[in-house]
Length: 275
Image 1: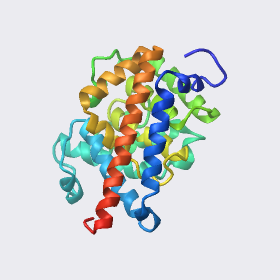
Image 2: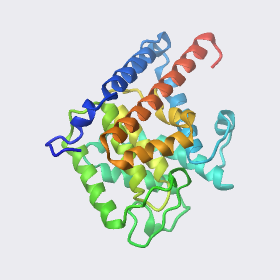
Image 3: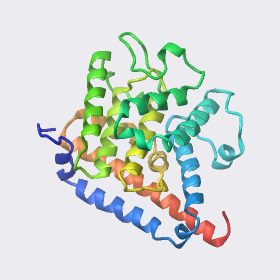
């Protein structure tokens, strides 16, 4: 990334990124243009939140049927149940933090981690970046990528927060992909980093105005594209090369498109009276 007052802006000019941005915009516009959105947009948003949480849990290794996620109220069982419960809590909380993100993104990340962990981690380690020597236990991002040390992680988190607060002319997809990729690669917390990273991506897409009603769950797309593709794309991001960054942004764009397609199907089902 070359030195510039707006370091994210050049990423929007990488080969293939402009096309990905335009493709996402068209997919989102198609959903917003559906007749169901005129009178039942809140229902579509609620369904998108549920499906997005399920998708994020899938990437984290908890592959539950949608109806099981919808039916269950107790998520205190095994590891998969706790993962699904954490994803649902994070999805619900993310929508309450949109107004805070632009002024204090680190506060939002801390809150998302607190909500995700619940009572499953020592209180002293919740909501703060890991310290030197502390381990990370994230199944969905344990892709063999080197784990940055605590000092590097802290510095890069501060840099990311400064970028968010300063604002950027880069397209929403580019900003969302960088936020997601940076958090997933840094793994700043001891656990639940993937859930937090994907929720942060959604916050950017919604807060930017690209998807203001939160009806295009990119987490669904990440799950549909599969864990293997997800970890490979993260490797591209971690490489830091222009080609790798472009591939990661395109991957996130495809995930957003698939999320939009999911909500289009929800609208169609509502129109038929089947949902």
